[in-house]
Image (cartoon, rainbow, N blue to C red; front, side, top):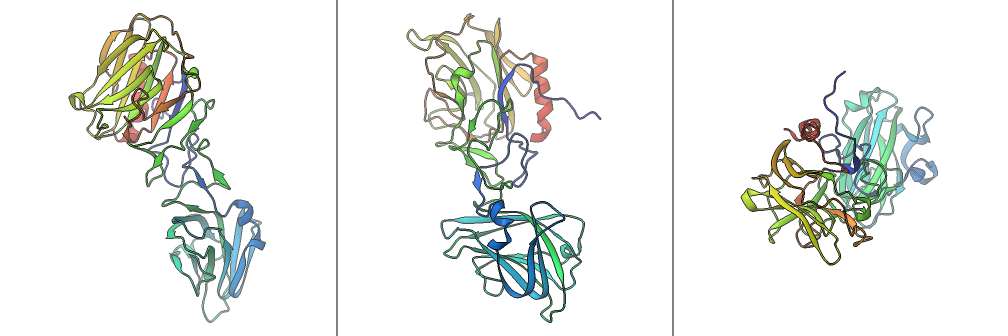
Length: 398
């Protein structure tokens, strides 16, 4: 089955893709496992039934023999809850998420969850009830999420409330429970997800560090224009005199200083956005970064890129020309500057490549999302630039 064009992989040496338009808050992708987080009820705690304390009438909690890493919660007489200590006592907004499915058809039971309470009869934050229709579905796993403000009681209680008259037995499966200090849900982790395990290099060779990044309510990295920078290893990994840099972004502003950084492989290799002509791209290369400082090329192209719409920009340098492409179309071509070798590439040894920043002026940060960046060790042809654009544009509604 034909699924459309694929991105160019020949010559790709680094890249990232947050899965924008594919991933959502609770879904990880191969190269974007999700925003860094810590699960306050890790799998080892969740699956150990001795960590859960019962309250209410008759019932039981057990490790399921039907599904891996899954608990079965049973109510045999009225309501029955089990609680676990999350260790969260105060300090902000907490989001809870889990998957559930009925094992038996419920008659009068309703599955409930609350936090900061011992059981369903004395809760502080009720995260809500699962709908009655869901309690009649034995086939499909459902996802539940809820958000509350932490206080001094860190108990999390889950339970079934059946008929107060008793005599009914209902069982529900629960798995992938995650409790995190966050205002929105993130993809499930059994323990935690670090700042260098959140976004994966497309070549899986270089660590990407998101510790200086903000994230929006959908869990996507979002540059705040103040101090957000995405780092990727040292500049020595990109010593290519002939290359292509591809960036997808959306913004409607530049820094008050007049520009906003997109790519900064070191102080001498940058791509940034300015307010000129409603928003254009400046592509600058220096060689021999120690004295004497040699400008190889500095060109600009594109218009109206501050329209808060999605754009693909590719800056490239080949054996004879330097080019700027916008949304699959060539907007600028110029001499490549005549520098056939790349001198002084170790001058800034240890400096991480950075994105969303202009290293020539650390105050010029980008505001908005940059979901895709790719670096190639060759100049992409026009056909290759267009292929990448066509392969990805539908994700951005283009």
